[in-house]
Image (tube, rainbow, N blue to C red; front, side, top):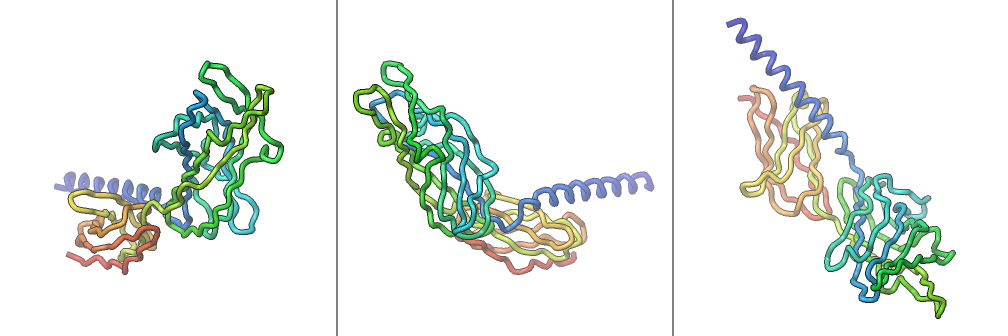
Length: 267
């Protein structure tokens, strides 16, 4: 019996340690910063076969402050004609400060070119005024804890200009914001007692849409970016002393729902 008890106790200790580690790891990203996801799309251009643009990165301005280069971006050569008819590609996905985005700038490199219908490659020159990148005014407020999706339309047809009879082409980028919307809502709250790890599941119908764990020491939790609607939240403690709790939680697009403190009852 002693051996069995010690084995069970060791298992509980190991499970608790794992849950604590997972809980701490998941909650590292449970801060209140907004997240910005920048995506690129285009309309078809019947005059050329390919339009390759050298994108070096994305920068934004918050209000009148200095420009911020988004850390988690995906520089590279992009064929704009791959992103037509509703297709797009992600250029950046990064946390940003709370506030108002006043401007976004697409940082361009020098390796821009087109492939004609006949297969000829023609390099694109960029006017000096746009060599530092293409700026677009935004003027959008962003709230902490919300993921925003910004879709840029890089109009290839209007951006490629033939320079007279020289045979050369100029890249004069025509860029506009196609949409700027929050992708979902977020939920935050506290579970007591805060000395144990509690798993939280956001359930809609038969499906678990998202989950997280509370932080040990304060009981805080946050689930980000879930579709709007009414959810059943299930709070499952990792010990055998407390009961599971449930709450009905409404989620609103672009907003953070704050749930009253959930106090777990003992069995």
